[in-house]
Length: 107
Image (cartoon, rainbow, N blue to C red):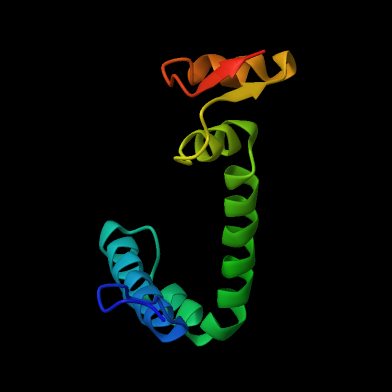
């Protein structure tokens, strides 16, 4: 059971936040002249179709980023019980950017 200070982010909160963001972004786009009001109306009309596409693309981008060598080294190095992360020299370029972290070093 989660303690009282932990809040779970539920799907309704996500959808509500996304609706507010889309409203803000579309208002900004119309205000800047990037989109017309008719185009924004079309976007909102087809939002049920576009939302799964956008969600899938965002999910793919996050998976690509979060599973990169650099991200995995940072994540592993941040675990308190891990004393040191030793990486293969093949990822030396990535490890050089993390050389300031004493928990991560190249083999």
